[in-house]
Image 1 (cartoon, one colour):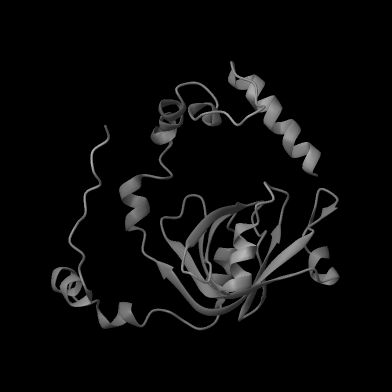
Image 2 (cartoon, one colour):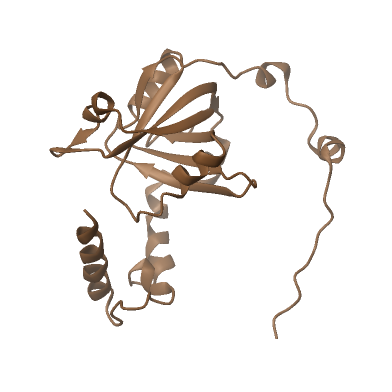
Length: 213
């Protein structure tokens, strides 16, 4: 039998602040309502970001987004846009935006310890001129996500320093995690997927995605 779930004491804001304290005035006011030159350069060089959304009931979702550096476009000082590339077609982020437009993004540049946070509200568009800007390998994006920016700020690098995210020594963690097989083989394989070697599963998965293109 599984052990019963343990419940922990929930702290309110006053209790949290009693432990953490208040931020320095300079830190508390570090965010800006627009995209400045530093943030623009950061976004232009970022090949990876995370996108956080939630539905009308507050159920949150965070998904990874990546492409070549500059795949997210700064349209003006208060607007960014990113392409929707072919994936699993769940479109959870898009469905959330239809119920709740709030968006939180976090940008990463390899080698940089700091990250960039850009928050605002978003919507999905099929504007032809915008989609043309997201053509890659001769294929135009089918949809784009536009974010009306309300908050921009750099996040200190302590998390990436502590994690050693860019340290080559940690590359061995991938092998330790997967035990030498495909990561999907670590869980129960979807119905219809072949069992056995990871290469057989990878070939099956690739065929599934190709049929969605």
